[in-house]
Image (cartoon, rainbow, N blue to C red; front, side, top):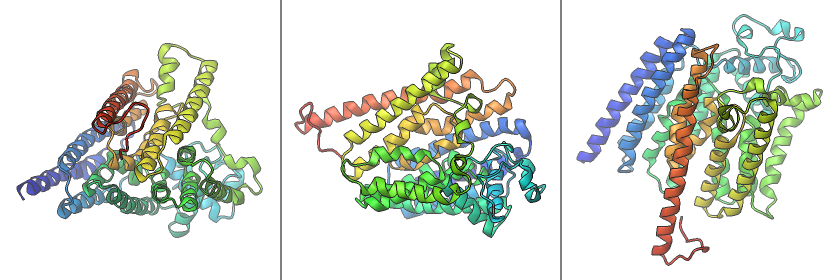
Length: 454
């Protein structure tokens, strides 16, 4: 009983301190431009420390205590609610979402024209159109995201609050599905804190409104159905996630079972069905801005590729192109190895999924905006990884690029973001191998024969 009260008091104190950060400190910074971004980086790092302390508190002695779980979920909701009325600060992507929804309800294919096109002049109004980033570029968001934009535009057109409430609704769905996953895997429900209190998810979710958060329910459904062997459902759910943002496609090879056709067929069918109506009249234009996204002008906070090229003074488009091809090739090889080594039990499917997401975040040679890492956070609630916990906190340093413009992101910030990630991954790999070998010896395991471990 005493331990329970210690946890409750600790959670209450950390929750209240965090609530002050979200509800008082952040609104004071919002609207102050680049200087505010510098303050936001400091605030986010402070909240991340509180988050780690809370995680240590509830995970060091896991329990199913309901009051503690209610406190975790209650504070997680409060953190998001206090951010709903705050000014947009971290990204202007949200304005493109609202614009694409508006264009669709005007009966126009969002892939047909860029926002600055004369054909769309009658749709422009002062609240949204002037704030769109890249107004001369066609939209890059896939059809699933476009369907979400249209849905919100139908209910609350041009409404920042309307979109944020939609994101919040998706997060509620994510929490419900994640609690189910924790229950099935035998992990304490208190581990939901690793998602519910994550500053990365909170700020990039309801505050910045990034569409990446909205794919998480489909992702968790795909994981759950794949674990249960419901292949067609799993493939359809994964296809829905890919239609919102393309990168969940890395899970297709990682979860595919040789000789099984329902999973990939359902995934491809859903993606094709999503693209087909939008491609009518625009053809290949349905990919929008995506081809340009791979150009050097879009490089932002690049990780491993930077250290293989510019970091050792290998500059220029040739070096950049070779490094990109190399890393994409390594990523594909790693995904195939994950699939080859995967077991078909529930823990094996989970490990393969988490490994695929982790491989993407480490090896992808394109931009690494903070919100691109949101989709690994539900996996961390089930299987905490010091390396990726570090990444979810450290990626906020990339916002310093805007604080120090035109100089850009300082080298030390990139090093703090990524080098500890690589070091911690090596440490996790070595300790994991040591634990596996120790377990194998205790069970009479021989080298080359996999132990029957979960």
